[in-house]
Length: 411
Ligand code: ADP
Ligand code: MG
Image 1: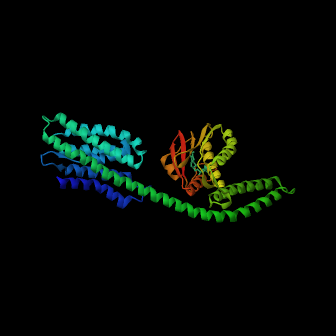
Image 2: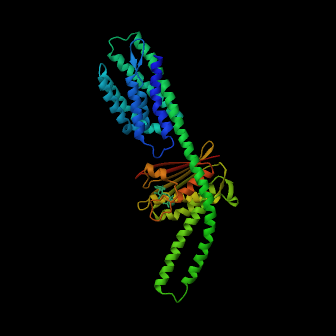
Image 3: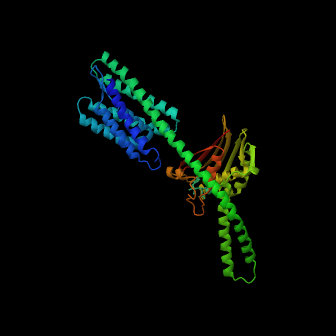
């Protein structure tokens, strides 16, 4: 019995190990189908070599991969597993085939329903929930078994005593491993991101300073030239164009400068009150122009150290994006600054066009923009600024509904 249990455990470990060894650092390109395939294989292996109790009853751990996929992937990814499970079960045939079909159908209908809720929980809660669901599943299974058994004897209770703890313990171990992998991937991604931002901010500081002076000089001379009386109309329009393009270049340079290292003369120790109000005031005309209402609430007494200019620029970029997302149809931009136990929370919500999951992942990449006049630097500034104060940004977005940026800055 113990050997077959270990064997089953090994079957469940295989997908985790293969994933860890071959796919861990390919998060953005990883193939979900591979995970489905691996889980199917481990499910089949569990069914092919079940755990045999001395009393003659057998049980297996097929529902562990099934539940895990159902919880993390929802109906879409659970469906192939459901098909595989039943095809294989029909191939084995014998007593209980129909019951197994009905039983797996119920599990398939119920468990993936909780997927969305499950994914939003933190790691500890997810482990707990998965264990709970697996215990619930096996108890449910045992009760359906009890209903068809002619008599419930000692054997049935032996089966119960063996299978319930096995399901719980194995599920917890597998879930801990999975959560650890997810945590590792997230940590290494954020390290990578902050390293990239550091390099970029060093470079941009030097380049932007060098470029700004020639831009200003060129601008001045072009304006002087524009005043000349000997110019034809056509020549004047050329100069206008040149000035416009210069303005654009200047915008990009100032975006980059905001992104550069904090400057000591701007560092302050405060609670964001002045900055958020100031930025709200300067963005309000822009909001009105686009029929956007700005709702603002401030409730924070926590202080921290930050670069005033950078924080202002960061907030402007976020507000501006929110307003631009509601261009043409109007809406509400709500800004809410509040304090939690040891963190400041800034929530910026719009009901604009929203983004797909892929678009959210691309946020903060330099030059990523879906706008005609966009520079794609706004979010880069936002991420780098928040990164510098050790804050975190959470993006919740739904296409057509809107976007919420939640920034939390630890104190
Ligand atoms: P830009 O605004 O110049 O395009 P950003 O870096 O500020 O550059 O934003 C990058 C892209 O992210 C935008 O082009 C837009 O597609 C998307 N985006 C940012 N914020 C929002 C939002 N609140 N709602 C919808 N899309 C957004
Ligand atoms: Mg922008």
